[in-house]
Image (cartoon, rainbow, N blue to C red; front, side, top):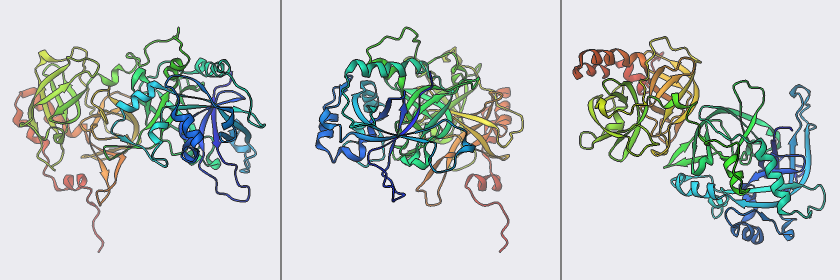
Amino acid sequence: MDSPSSALLLHSPIDKDSRITLRGSSGISISKNWILTHGTALDPIIDKSPAISNFITNLVPGELTIAPRKLANELKFRVYRDLEIDDDSRSGDYSHVQEHLGSVVAAWKCPLLTKTFNEFFETFNFPKSSIKFDRFLRPIYLLVLITDSDGKSIVEIPTVKQALSCLLDQALRNSIRGSSVEIESTPFGNPVFIGSIARGVISNVVGDEGCVIMTDAYAFPGSEGGPVYVIPPDCKRRIISGMVIAPLSWCRGEWVDYTFAANLAPCLLNILRKKDPRSSPIISCQEDEALDRGVVLVRCGINWGTGVLVDKDTGTFLTCSHVVAEAPEREISIVMSTDRINSRAWAKLLYRTPENQPYDVAVLRVNPQDMEPSLRSIRLSRAPIVKGEPVVSVGFPFSSSVRPTISSGVVSKSMDCALLTTCCAQSGTSGGPIVSRATGEMLGMIVCNALSSDGAVLYPRMSLAVPAAAMDRPLREYLRTDNPDVLRAFTCDDAIVRNVWNFYPLLPSKL
Protein backbone atom coordinates (compact mmCIF):
# COMPACT_ATOMS: atom_id res chain seq x y z
CA MET A 1 0.00 0.00 0.00
CA ASP A 2 1.38 3.42 -1.01
CA SER A 3 2.00 5.92 1.75
CA PRO A 4 -0.55 8.76 1.90
CA SER A 5 0.69 11.77 -0.08
CA SER A 6 -0.18 15.45 -0.27
CA ALA A 7 -2.80 17.14 -2.41
CA LEU A 8 -3.94 20.68 -3.25
CA LEU A 9 -7.60 21.71 -3.05
CA LEU A 10 -8.99 24.82 -4.76
CA HIS A 11 -12.62 25.73 -4.24
CA SER A 12 -12.84 27.81 -7.40
CA PRO A 13 -11.63 26.70 -10.84
CA ILE A 14 -8.39 28.23 -12.05
CA ASP A 15 -8.89 30.99 -14.56
CA LYS A 16 -6.89 29.66 -17.50
CA ASP A 17 -6.34 33.20 -18.81
CA SER A 18 -4.83 34.39 -15.54
CA ARG A 19 -1.90 33.37 -13.39
CA ILE A 20 -3.76 34.47 -10.26
CA THR A 21 -5.72 31.87 -8.33
CA LEU A 22 -7.66 31.85 -5.14
CA ARG A 23 -5.67 30.60 -2.17
CA GLY A 24 -6.04 26.88 -1.88
CA SER A 25 -5.51 24.43 0.93
CA SER A 26 -3.43 21.28 1.29
CA GLY A 27 -4.76 17.81 1.97
CA ILE A 28 -3.78 14.18 2.56
CA SER A 29 -4.40 11.81 -0.34
CA ILE A 30 -5.53 8.66 1.47
CA SER A 31 -6.21 6.65 -1.69
CA LYS A 32 -7.22 7.09 -5.30
CA ASN A 33 -10.70 8.29 -4.30
CA TRP A 34 -10.30 9.93 -0.89
CA ILE A 35 -8.70 13.15 0.40
CA LEU A 36 -8.64 14.23 4.04
CA THR A 37 -8.22 17.94 4.67
CA HIS A 38 -8.64 20.53 7.39
CA GLY A 39 -11.64 22.71 8.15
CA THR A 40 -9.77 25.88 7.15
CA ALA A 41 -10.23 24.78 3.52
CA LEU A 42 -13.72 26.28 3.93
CA ASP A 43 -12.39 29.58 5.28
CA PRO A 44 -12.80 31.54 1.99
CA ILE A 45 -16.44 30.52 1.56
CA ILE A 46 -18.01 29.71 4.94
CA ASP A 47 -19.02 33.28 5.79
CA LYS A 48 -20.51 33.71 2.32
CA SER A 49 -22.75 30.63 2.49
CA PRO A 50 -25.35 30.40 5.27
CA ALA A 51 -25.99 26.76 4.33
CA ILE A 52 -22.32 25.73 4.76
CA SER A 53 -22.08 27.82 7.91
CA ASN A 54 -25.10 26.04 9.43
CA PHE A 55 -23.75 22.62 8.45
CA ILE A 56 -20.36 23.23 10.10
CA THR A 57 -21.60 25.03 13.22
CA ASN A 58 -24.17 22.28 13.89
CA LEU A 59 -21.61 19.46 13.84
CA VAL A 60 -21.86 17.38 17.00
CA PRO A 61 -18.37 16.93 18.51
CA GLY A 62 -17.11 13.40 17.99
CA GLU A 63 -19.81 12.44 15.47
CA LEU A 64 -19.15 11.71 11.79
CA THR A 65 -21.67 13.67 9.74
CA ILE A 66 -22.55 13.18 6.08
CA ALA A 67 -22.74 16.45 4.13
CA PRO A 68 -26.26 17.24 2.82
CA ARG A 69 -26.59 16.46 -0.87
CA LYS A 70 -28.00 19.93 -1.47
CA LEU A 71 -24.58 21.33 -0.56
CA ALA A 72 -22.71 19.19 -3.11
CA ASN A 73 -22.26 22.02 -5.59
CA GLU A 74 -21.11 24.49 -2.93
CA LEU A 75 -18.65 21.99 -1.47
CA LYS A 76 -16.93 21.17 -4.76
CA PHE A 77 -13.15 21.37 -5.02
CA ARG A 78 -10.61 20.94 -7.75
CA VAL A 79 -8.07 18.47 -6.42
CA TYR A 80 -4.48 18.39 -7.65
CA ARG A 81 -2.00 15.62 -6.90
CA ASP A 82 1.70 15.65 -7.70
CA LEU A 83 2.83 12.54 -9.56
CA GLU A 84 5.85 10.83 -8.02
CA ILE A 85 8.32 11.17 -10.89
CA ASP A 86 11.93 12.29 -11.09
CA ASP A 87 12.21 16.05 -10.66
CA ASP A 88 14.71 16.22 -13.57
CA SER A 89 11.99 15.12 -16.00
CA ARG A 90 9.61 17.92 -15.13
CA SER A 91 9.14 20.57 -17.76
CA GLY A 92 7.54 23.24 -15.57
CA ASP A 93 4.19 23.04 -17.40
CA TYR A 94 2.32 21.12 -14.66
CA SER A 95 2.34 17.96 -16.80
CA HIS A 96 3.24 16.03 -13.66
CA VAL A 97 0.11 17.18 -11.80
CA GLN A 98 -3.15 15.24 -11.92
CA GLU A 99 -6.41 17.21 -11.72
CA HIS A 100 -9.70 15.81 -10.38
CA LEU A 101 -13.05 17.03 -9.25
CA GLY A 102 -14.09 16.29 -5.70
CA SER A 103 -16.65 17.21 -3.11
CA VAL A 104 -16.77 17.28 0.69
CA VAL A 105 -18.98 14.32 1.62
CA ALA A 106 -18.37 14.09 5.37
CA ALA A 107 -17.02 16.13 8.27
CA TRP A 108 -16.46 15.92 12.00
CA LYS A 109 -15.45 18.12 14.87
CA CYS A 110 -12.70 16.48 16.91
CA PRO A 111 -13.39 16.82 20.66
CA LEU A 112 -9.70 16.25 21.47
CA LEU A 113 -8.66 19.22 19.34
CA THR A 114 -11.52 21.34 20.66
CA LYS A 115 -10.42 20.80 24.26
CA THR A 116 -6.77 21.43 23.43
CA PHE A 117 -7.48 24.69 21.60
CA ASN A 118 -9.67 25.86 24.45
CA GLU A 119 -6.95 25.11 27.02
CA PHE A 120 -3.39 25.00 25.69
CA PHE A 121 -4.02 27.54 22.89
CA GLU A 122 -6.12 29.93 24.96
CA THR A 123 -3.54 32.75 24.68
CA PHE A 124 -2.75 32.05 20.99
CA ASN A 125 -3.90 34.03 17.98
CA PHE A 126 -4.03 32.75 14.42
CA PRO A 127 -4.22 34.62 11.09
CA LYS A 128 -7.83 35.48 10.47
CA SER A 129 -9.55 36.00 7.15
CA SER A 130 -12.93 34.94 8.57
CA ILE A 131 -12.85 36.27 12.10
CA LYS A 132 -16.10 34.62 13.08
CA PHE A 133 -15.09 31.10 12.06
CA ASP A 134 -11.29 30.97 12.37
CA ARG A 135 -11.01 29.36 15.81
CA PHE A 136 -14.14 27.30 15.22
CA LEU A 137 -12.64 25.66 12.11
CA ARG A 138 -9.42 24.55 13.85
CA PRO A 139 -10.81 21.21 15.18
CA ILE A 140 -12.73 20.38 11.96
CA TYR A 141 -11.81 17.54 9.59
CA LEU A 142 -13.24 17.30 6.06
CA LEU A 143 -13.34 14.18 3.89
CA VAL A 144 -13.38 14.75 0.13
CA LEU A 145 -14.50 12.13 -2.39
CA ILE A 146 -13.02 12.28 -5.88
CA THR A 147 -16.06 12.20 -8.18
CA ASP A 148 -14.96 13.55 -11.58
CA SER A 149 -18.68 13.88 -12.26
CA ASP A 150 -21.64 15.79 -10.87
CA GLY A 151 -20.33 15.42 -7.29
CA LYS A 152 -23.62 13.93 -6.07
CA SER A 153 -22.45 10.43 -5.22
CA ILE A 154 -24.33 8.82 -2.36
CA VAL A 155 -21.98 8.10 0.55
CA GLU A 156 -22.82 6.43 3.84
CA ILE A 157 -21.06 6.33 7.22
CA PRO A 158 -19.62 2.79 6.85
CA THR A 159 -17.89 3.83 3.61
CA VAL A 160 -16.43 6.91 5.29
CA LYS A 161 -15.20 4.86 8.26
CA GLN A 162 -13.56 2.40 5.90
CA ALA A 163 -11.59 5.22 4.25
CA LEU A 164 -10.51 6.64 7.62
CA SER A 165 -9.55 3.16 8.87
CA CYS A 166 -7.28 2.84 5.85
CA LEU A 167 -5.44 5.99 6.96
CA LEU A 168 -5.36 4.86 10.60
CA ASP A 169 -3.71 1.58 9.59
CA GLN A 170 -0.77 3.57 8.20
CA ALA A 171 -0.57 6.25 10.91
CA LEU A 172 2.25 6.32 13.45
CA ARG A 173 1.06 5.48 16.96
CA ASN A 174 3.87 7.00 19.05
CA SER A 175 5.00 10.54 18.27
CA ILE A 176 8.37 10.87 19.99
CA ARG A 177 10.01 14.21 20.63
CA GLY A 178 13.19 14.69 18.68
CA SER A 179 12.09 12.42 15.80
CA SER A 180 12.88 13.75 12.32
CA VAL A 181 9.79 14.92 10.45
CA GLU A 182 8.86 16.12 6.98
CA ILE A 183 5.91 18.29 5.96
CA GLU A 184 4.66 18.02 2.37
CA SER A 185 2.21 20.71 1.32
CA THR A 186 1.41 23.53 -1.07
CA PRO A 187 2.60 26.83 0.45
CA PHE A 188 0.13 29.69 -0.07
CA GLY A 189 -2.16 27.20 -1.84
CA ASN A 190 -0.40 28.04 -5.11
CA PRO A 191 -0.04 25.18 -7.64
CA VAL A 192 3.48 26.38 -8.45
CA PHE A 193 4.56 25.13 -5.01
CA ILE A 194 2.64 21.84 -4.98
CA GLY A 195 4.53 19.02 -3.25
CA SER A 196 6.97 21.31 -1.43
CA ILE A 197 8.64 19.85 1.64
CA ALA A 198 10.07 21.19 4.90
CA ARG A 199 12.01 19.24 7.50
CA GLY A 200 12.59 19.51 11.23
CA VAL A 201 11.90 17.52 14.38
CA ILE A 202 8.94 16.80 16.63
CA SER A 203 9.38 19.56 19.19
CA ASN A 204 6.65 18.47 21.58
CA VAL A 205 3.36 16.59 21.84
CA VAL A 206 0.63 18.43 23.74
CA GLY A 207 -3.06 18.39 24.48
CA ASP A 208 -5.63 15.79 25.41
CA GLU A 209 -4.28 12.32 24.53
CA GLY A 210 -1.32 14.01 22.79
CA CYS A 211 -3.57 15.16 19.94
CA VAL A 212 -1.35 18.07 18.81
CA ILE A 213 2.19 17.82 17.49
CA MET A 214 4.53 20.81 17.65
CA THR A 215 7.31 20.82 15.06
CA ASP A 216 10.01 23.28 14.06
CA ALA A 217 9.57 22.22 10.41
CA TYR A 218 8.43 25.41 8.74
CA ALA A 219 5.02 25.67 7.06
CA PHE A 220 3.23 28.55 5.33
CA PRO A 221 -0.41 29.62 4.96
CA GLY A 222 -2.05 27.19 2.56
CA SER A 223 -0.21 24.26 4.17
CA GLU A 224 -3.20 23.57 6.43
CA GLY A 225 -4.33 20.00 5.79
CA GLY A 226 -0.94 18.85 4.52
CA PRO A 227 0.59 15.59 5.79
CA VAL A 228 3.32 15.43 8.42
CA TYR A 229 5.57 12.38 8.21
CA VAL A 230 8.05 10.90 10.65
CA ILE A 231 11.31 9.79 9.03
CA PRO A 232 12.73 6.72 10.85
CA PRO A 233 16.48 6.51 11.50
CA ASP A 234 16.91 4.08 8.58
CA CYS A 235 15.25 6.69 6.29
CA LYS A 236 13.76 3.90 4.17
CA ARG A 237 10.22 5.29 4.11
CA ARG A 238 8.08 8.04 5.55
CA ILE A 239 5.36 7.22 8.07
CA ILE A 240 2.26 9.43 8.16
CA SER A 241 1.90 11.01 11.59
CA GLY A 242 -0.05 14.25 11.49
CA MET A 243 -1.90 16.93 9.54
CA VAL A 244 -0.96 20.62 9.57
CA ILE A 245 -3.58 22.73 11.36
CA ALA A 246 -1.77 25.99 12.19
CA PRO A 247 1.34 27.10 10.26
CA LEU A 248 1.37 30.62 11.71
CA SER A 249 0.42 31.83 15.17
CA TRP A 250 1.19 34.35 17.88
CA CYS A 251 1.32 33.79 21.64
CA ARG A 252 1.03 36.72 24.04
CA GLY A 253 1.93 39.00 21.14
CA GLU A 254 5.09 37.02 20.25
CA TRP A 255 5.46 35.42 16.84
CA VAL A 256 5.46 31.62 17.27
CA ASP A 257 7.80 30.04 14.75
CA TYR A 258 6.52 26.49 15.26
CA THR A 259 4.03 24.56 13.14
CA PHE A 260 1.14 22.83 14.90
CA ALA A 261 -0.30 19.61 13.51
CA ALA A 262 -3.10 17.28 14.50
CA ASN A 263 -1.76 13.93 15.70
CA LEU A 264 -3.74 11.61 13.43
CA ALA A 265 -3.67 8.40 15.49
CA PRO A 266 -5.54 9.63 18.60
CA CYS A 267 -7.92 11.77 16.52
CA LEU A 268 -8.85 8.89 14.19
CA LEU A 269 -9.15 6.41 17.05
CA ASN A 270 -11.53 8.82 18.76
CA ILE A 271 -13.85 9.32 15.81
CA LEU A 272 -13.81 5.62 14.85
CA ARG A 273 -14.55 4.62 18.47
CA LYS A 274 -11.63 2.22 18.39
CA LYS A 275 -9.23 0.95 21.00
CA ASP A 276 -5.96 0.31 19.29
CA PRO A 277 -4.58 -3.16 20.07
CA ARG A 278 -1.15 -1.96 18.89
CA SER A 279 -1.31 1.15 20.99
CA SER A 280 1.23 2.16 23.57
CA PRO A 281 1.43 5.54 25.29
CA ILE A 282 1.23 8.35 22.76
CA ILE A 283 4.32 9.96 24.26
CA SER A 284 7.22 7.57 24.73
CA CYS A 285 9.37 8.18 27.79
CA GLN A 286 12.33 6.00 26.87
CA GLU A 287 13.72 7.51 23.70
CA ASP A 288 13.44 11.17 24.63
CA GLU A 289 14.35 10.81 28.31
CA ALA A 290 17.94 11.96 27.71
CA LEU A 291 16.67 15.30 26.38
CA ASP A 292 15.05 16.07 29.75
CA ARG A 293 17.59 14.63 32.13
CA GLY A 294 19.17 17.93 33.17
CA VAL A 295 16.53 20.51 32.16
CA VAL A 296 14.14 22.04 34.70
CA LEU A 297 11.52 24.77 34.91
CA VAL A 298 12.55 27.84 36.92
CA ARG A 299 9.85 30.07 38.45
CA CYS A 300 10.25 33.47 40.05
CA GLY A 301 7.03 35.38 40.71
CA ILE A 302 4.81 35.24 37.62
CA ASN A 303 7.78 34.66 35.34
CA TRP A 304 9.30 31.37 34.30
CA GLY A 305 12.30 30.21 32.32
CA THR A 306 14.50 27.17 31.89
CA GLY A 307 17.32 25.91 34.09
CA VAL A 308 20.17 23.45 33.57
CA LEU A 309 21.50 21.07 36.22
CA VAL A 310 25.31 21.26 36.12
CA ASP A 311 26.17 19.46 39.36
CA LYS A 312 23.74 17.05 40.97
CA ASP A 313 25.82 16.38 44.10
CA THR A 314 25.57 20.04 45.18
CA GLY A 315 22.21 20.81 43.52
CA THR A 316 23.72 23.57 41.33
CA PHE A 317 21.75 24.97 38.39
CA LEU A 318 22.36 27.60 35.72
CA THR A 319 19.70 29.89 34.29
CA CYS A 320 19.47 33.43 32.94
CA SER A 321 19.76 36.44 35.22
CA HIS A 322 16.61 38.01 33.76
CA VAL A 323 14.58 34.87 34.61
CA VAL A 324 15.13 35.53 38.33
CA ALA A 325 15.16 39.33 38.13
CA GLU A 326 12.43 39.62 40.80
CA ALA A 327 14.56 37.84 43.42
CA PRO A 328 15.02 38.22 46.37
CA GLU A 329 11.59 39.88 46.67
CA ARG A 330 10.11 36.82 44.99
CA GLU A 331 11.09 33.29 45.91
CA ILE A 332 12.67 31.06 43.28
CA SER A 333 11.35 27.56 42.76
CA ILE A 334 12.54 24.79 40.49
CA VAL A 335 10.09 22.30 38.99
CA MET A 336 12.09 19.18 38.28
CA SER A 337 9.37 17.25 36.47
CA THR A 338 6.21 18.63 34.87
CA ASP A 339 4.81 15.08 34.91
CA ARG A 340 4.77 14.96 38.72
CA ILE A 341 2.83 17.20 41.11
CA ASN A 342 5.28 17.08 44.03
CA SER A 343 8.54 17.81 42.22
CA ARG A 344 9.03 21.47 43.18
CA ALA A 345 11.94 22.64 45.34
CA TRP A 346 12.95 26.08 46.59
CA ALA A 347 16.21 27.44 45.22
CA LYS A 348 18.76 29.81 46.67
CA LEU A 349 20.18 32.52 44.41
CA LEU A 350 23.96 32.36 44.67
CA TYR A 351 24.76 34.98 42.06
CA ARG A 352 23.35 36.73 39.04
CA THR A 353 24.95 39.18 36.64
CA PRO A 354 23.69 42.77 36.83
CA GLU A 355 20.91 43.87 34.47
CA ASN A 356 21.97 44.53 30.87
CA GLN A 357 25.46 43.13 31.47
CA PRO A 358 26.99 40.13 29.76
CA TYR A 359 26.57 37.28 30.25
CA ASP A 360 23.03 37.29 31.73
CA VAL A 361 23.82 34.27 33.93
CA ALA A 362 22.42 33.24 37.31
CA VAL A 363 23.55 30.39 39.54
CA LEU A 364 21.00 28.64 41.76
CA ARG A 365 21.35 25.99 44.42
CA VAL A 366 18.85 23.44 45.68
CA ASN A 367 19.22 21.25 48.74
CA PRO A 368 20.64 17.98 47.31
CA GLN A 369 18.14 16.05 49.45
CA ASP A 370 15.32 17.71 47.48
CA MET A 371 16.70 16.65 44.11
CA GLU A 372 14.66 14.50 41.75
CA PRO A 373 16.53 11.14 41.57
CA SER A 374 16.01 10.81 37.80
CA LEU A 375 17.80 14.09 36.99
CA ARG A 376 21.30 13.96 35.55
CA SER A 377 23.90 16.70 35.28
CA ILE A 378 24.55 18.09 31.82
CA ARG A 379 28.21 18.21 30.90
CA LEU A 380 29.53 21.51 29.56
CA SER A 381 31.58 21.01 26.41
CA ARG A 382 35.20 22.15 26.35
CA ALA A 383 35.74 21.31 22.69
CA PRO A 384 35.87 24.00 19.98
CA ILE A 385 32.42 24.79 18.56
CA VAL A 386 32.27 24.33 14.80
CA LYS A 387 30.10 26.51 12.56
CA GLY A 388 27.39 24.36 10.98
CA GLU A 389 27.40 21.80 13.81
CA PRO A 390 23.91 20.25 14.28
CA VAL A 391 22.39 21.18 17.64
CA VAL A 392 19.10 21.15 19.54
CA SER A 393 17.70 23.60 22.05
CA VAL A 394 15.56 22.54 25.01
CA GLY A 395 13.24 24.79 27.02
CA PHE A 396 9.74 25.72 28.17
CA PRO A 397 8.12 28.14 25.69
CA PHE A 398 4.38 28.94 25.79
CA SER A 399 3.49 26.75 28.76
CA SER A 400 4.95 25.77 32.10
CA SER A 401 2.75 22.69 32.38
CA VAL A 402 4.10 20.54 29.55
CA ARG A 403 7.37 18.73 29.06
CA PRO A 404 10.30 20.64 27.54
CA THR A 405 10.09 21.62 23.89
CA ILE A 406 12.87 20.77 21.44
CA SER A 407 14.05 22.68 18.39
CA SER A 408 16.72 21.58 15.93
CA GLY A 409 19.19 23.83 14.17
CA VAL A 410 22.84 24.46 13.49
CA VAL A 411 25.56 26.66 14.90
CA SER A 412 25.24 29.72 12.69
CA LYS A 413 28.24 31.56 14.12
CA SER A 414 30.64 30.81 16.94
CA MET A 415 32.56 33.48 18.84
CA ASP A 416 34.51 33.33 22.08
CA CYS A 417 31.83 35.36 23.84
CA ALA A 418 28.64 34.38 21.98
CA LEU A 419 27.05 31.50 20.14
CA LEU A 420 24.49 32.09 17.39
CA THR A 421 22.18 29.23 16.36
CA THR A 422 19.16 28.71 14.12
CA CYS A 423 17.19 26.92 16.86
CA CYS A 424 13.71 28.34 17.43
CA ALA A 425 13.76 30.09 20.82
CA GLN A 426 10.75 31.72 22.48
CA SER A 427 9.92 33.34 25.81
CA GLY A 428 10.38 30.69 28.48
CA THR A 429 13.33 29.09 26.67
CA SER A 430 15.79 31.50 28.33
CA GLY A 431 18.32 29.54 30.38
CA GLY A 432 17.86 26.38 28.33
CA PRO A 433 20.78 24.46 26.86
CA ILE A 434 22.09 24.32 23.32
CA VAL A 435 23.10 20.66 23.01
CA SER A 436 25.36 19.03 20.44
CA ARG A 437 23.48 16.31 18.56
CA ALA A 438 26.73 14.40 18.15
CA THR A 439 27.97 14.36 21.75
CA GLY A 440 24.98 15.31 23.92
CA GLU A 441 27.15 17.94 25.63
CA MET A 442 25.99 21.48 26.36
CA LEU A 443 27.55 24.00 23.97
CA GLY A 444 25.83 27.07 25.39
CA MET A 445 22.90 28.57 27.30
CA ILE A 446 20.11 30.43 25.48
CA VAL A 447 19.74 34.07 26.48
CA CYS A 448 17.76 35.95 23.81
CA ASN A 449 16.76 36.36 20.17
CA ALA A 450 17.85 38.99 17.72
CA LEU A 451 15.54 42.02 17.75
CA SER A 452 14.97 44.55 14.99
CA SER A 453 16.50 47.99 15.54
CA ASP A 454 13.08 49.51 16.24
CA GLY A 455 12.21 46.72 18.69
CA ALA A 456 9.12 45.75 16.71
CA VAL A 457 10.20 42.35 15.36
CA LEU A 458 11.80 39.47 17.24
CA TYR A 459 13.45 36.77 15.15
CA PRO A 460 12.88 33.37 16.82
CA ARG A 461 15.35 31.49 14.63
CA MET A 462 18.31 33.72 15.44
CA SER A 463 19.00 32.83 19.05
CA LEU A 464 22.01 34.05 21.01
CA ALA A 465 23.61 31.85 23.67
CA VAL A 466 26.44 32.11 26.20
CA PRO A 467 29.15 29.64 25.12
CA ALA A 468 29.89 26.83 27.55
CA ALA A 469 33.55 27.85 27.59
CA ALA A 470 32.65 31.27 29.01
CA MET A 471 30.81 29.63 31.93
CA ASP A 472 33.02 26.63 32.57
CA ARG A 473 35.91 28.19 34.52
CA PRO A 474 33.88 30.25 37.08
CA LEU A 475 31.57 27.30 37.60
CA ARG A 476 34.38 24.81 38.17
CA GLU A 477 36.07 27.23 40.57
CA TYR A 478 32.87 27.58 42.58
CA LEU A 479 32.33 23.82 42.74
CA ARG A 480 35.94 23.39 43.90
CA THR A 481 35.90 26.11 46.59
CA ASP A 482 32.20 26.43 47.49
CA ASN A 483 32.85 30.19 47.50
CA PRO A 484 30.06 32.16 45.77
CA ASP A 485 32.35 35.19 45.36
CA VAL A 486 34.17 33.47 42.51
CA LEU A 487 30.93 33.60 40.51
CA ARG A 488 31.46 37.33 40.00
CA ALA A 489 33.66 36.28 37.10
CA PHE A 490 30.44 35.66 35.15
CA THR A 491 30.00 39.44 34.83
CA CYS A 492 32.11 40.65 31.93
CA ASP A 493 33.26 44.27 31.61
CA ASP A 494 35.08 43.81 28.32
CA ALA A 495 33.96 46.46 25.81
CA ILE A 496 34.12 44.08 22.84
CA VAL A 497 31.94 41.53 24.62
CA ARG A 498 29.41 44.25 25.52
CA ASN A 499 29.31 45.38 21.89
CA VAL A 500 28.66 41.86 20.67
CA TRP A 501 25.77 41.37 23.06
CA ASN A 502 24.35 44.81 22.17
CA PHE A 503 24.70 43.99 18.45
CA TYR A 504 27.07 46.92 17.91
CA PRO A 505 29.32 46.70 14.83
CA LEU A 506 32.85 45.57 15.54
CA LEU A 507 34.39 46.51 12.21
CA PRO A 508 36.50 49.67 12.13
CA SER A 509 34.88 52.60 10.37
CA LYS A 510 36.32 53.72 7.06
CA LEU A 511 34.80 57.18 7.34
